Amino acid sequence: MKEIEGASGQQPARLRRTPSWLITQTATLAHRLVSAALVEVGATRYHYAVLAALEEFGPISQAELGRRCHIDRSDVVATINDLVHGRYVERRQDPADRRQNLITLTDAGRQRLQHIAGVLDTVQTDLLAPLTESERTTLTTLLRRILDHQAAGTGRPE
Amino acid sequence: MKEIEGASGQQPARLRRTPSWLITQTATLAHRLVSAALVEVGATRYHYAVLAALEEFGPISQAELGRRCHIDRSDVVATINDLVHGRYVERRQDPADRRQNLITLTDAGRQRLQHIAGVLDTVQTDLLAPLTESERTTLTTLLRRILDHQAAGTGRPE
DNA sequence: ATCAGGTCGTTGGTCGCACCAACGGTTCTG
DNA sequence: CAGAACCGTTGGTGCGACCAACGACCTGAT
Image (cartoon, rainbow over all chains, first blue to last red; front, side, top):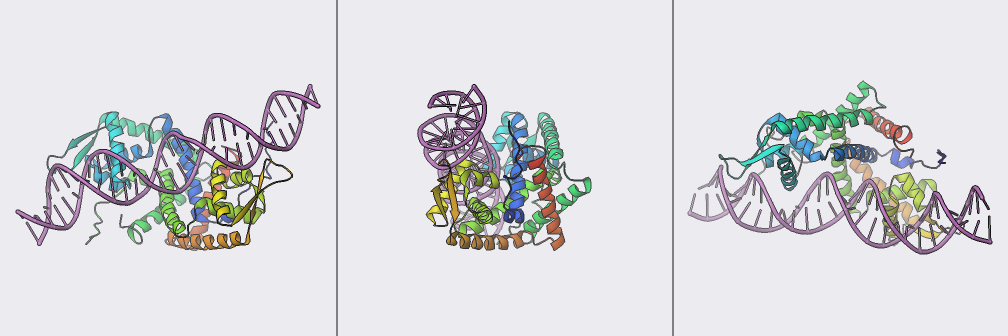
């Protein structure tokens, strides 16, 4: 038998009061759920980000993809390799600027994105279960504020 | 010169609407800031967590430390090794149960914790700069709710 | 008293993510 | 035309989170 003793497993209060700790902790949790879900469909976070960017912005270069999704150029290469291999995107040299590759989303890619988005949506509702609808938007807003602030003002100019 | 062009670097809206994405994104940001700060004092997240737990709960076994801080047993080993090497904790076998090591915080360790906490505090205020005081507590509360819910109800019983 | 099953510390890996340095090819700019 | 800047690519680093397996040890049921 297991006997769930509630007395033992308590976290240090100091950690519970440290926002950055809570953020990374929550991220770890989200990470676990998202990863587990993505692994099942053979995808990765980078796949999702890149597909989403391509859907929204159309054919675009790898460097631009990296900038928009905050992914390192070198990691974009591997991601595109994967996606090309799965026929989700096409990579071809931009005739107008032979330094660049133009990445194009295929129909299969669009489907793929839809699929992954669905998977993530499921995880989302699971993760945010304890929050009301308005709380979720509040959380989203606060996080966005932090990110935008850091992107614009302090820190790197995105 | 750098010329901060604001027109190019926009993120896909799909990502901006995906909470789990925002969370991991924010975590990455927090991670970057925290790491940079911790590296300067030669510490790591695990160090902080372990020290905080020892301060709050007194002498305790490595397994228990792992449980309280959500750190894998094997990673606790390395962390304690580091801390022992820096004279911040002492590791000795529990005479009552020779399977366990009892980890004790030293005075230097207490100081160390204080120091690290100060560093993290600085990062915190930087990270949460765009939020008002009440917004910060809101954020903290929401994150806590998510974590507690997952720890208690769904998922693992902590 | 014994023995199976559980716990603990430890070793030795794996994997994803974020990042950096450097290279050749290309384009832009002075 | 020369140098600066940019692109894709290769190769490598480091942290954080995990997992499997081992010997030593404790405990409970028989």
